[in-house]
Image (cartoon, rainbow, N blue to C red; front, side, top):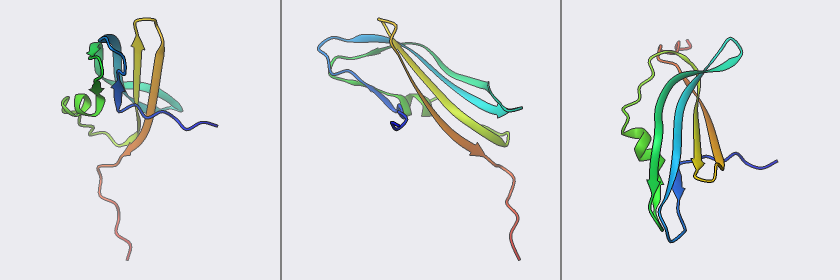
Length: 103
């Protein structure tokens, strides 16, 4: 079984710029299903020749904050001009209430 892809950047090793459609969503696990919680990015981006599109910086510049406790995942999908899609999912949990201290 192969390791999951964790998409933190999109690299262009070619000699020409290319366009992608990028979707970054936060989904919440609720009632035994993953449901869309918040769409962070959904748009067209250019990846320069011999360059990268840094998804970490792009995401961090959105000022995302989650106040609700629960299990979440970051769902990233990139679609190139030929229609080829690459997806990445990273699960995480949010617990904002203090944990009890054991005696």
